[in-house]
Image 1 (cartoon, rainbow, N blue to C red):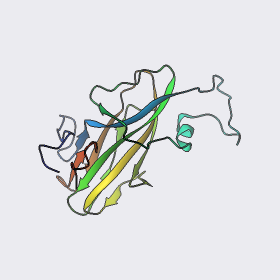
Image 2: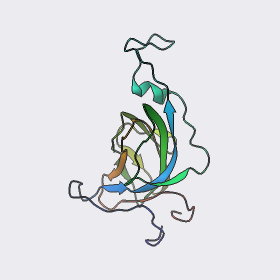
Image 3: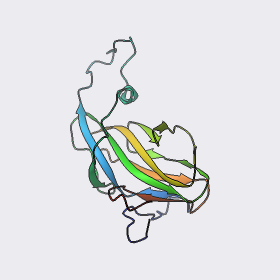
Length: 166
């Protein structure tokens, strides 16, 4: 990826460690409003109580291109809970582990190259697709960052242009 083609900021905030890459733009699928049960005793077909995390057990459609979005300005506007998927690409310059912290969502699930990344995940050199499925309430502002085990080991792109990362 060239610096000119980079559409995601590697900017650091005052609160972020020096090796944290904030995802600023990405591709958004959704958000899709969800009709959640109104009773706190609501149970699903398996007899489990309703939780926002359970909504992530169902497949969310992240096929197609998605809509480019600036995460700095993105806010969920639908009433109640909504689900969606945010996708972007990470280029690892060498072998490293990454974590993908997400804030502003009631629940989320991160996958890297189709594998769930609930804890630090090892990356080989090259390009990797990251998907963040989320559940968020109205006015929530999901924010994502990538934290590599080695400073400067990754670059991030929204993936809209296939030539961003090769």
